[in-house]
Length: 153
Picture (cartoon, rainbow, N blue to C red):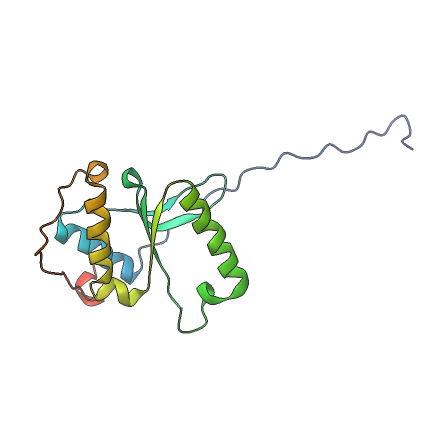
C-alpha cells in the first residue's frame, strides 16, 4: 500500500548508447581497400552500422549494393567467432542482415589475401552493376593477389 505522499518510481527511458569510435582498419581490411582500388571497384564503407538500434557493424560494406564482407579472424585459435555464445550472436546478426536484403560474404584473412575474396567480390559486383555503377569484369581478367605487406599504409 502506498502512503499518500509517496508515488511509485517512474521507469526511466533508455538512453541510446553512443557508437564507439571506429577502429583503424585491420590488415585484411586494408588489403580489401587496396584490392578495390586496384580493381576499379568502389571503396567500401568501413564498419558500417546497420539494423538500428542495434550496434552491429559490418567490417566492410557497399550500402548501395546491400553487400558486406565480414572477416572472421581467430578461427584457428578458438577466437570469438568460434565460441558458442559469440557464434549465436553472430548468427543473429547475419540472419537479420539476410532478412533485410544484405548479401554477406564471410571470409578468413587467408581468403582475403589468396584471391578468393577478389573472385567472390567480382561475382557479387557483376550481379549488381546497377548498384555500384560498374560494368561486369572481363571473364579472362587475371586474379589480383595482394599480401598484407603490400596493402600496408
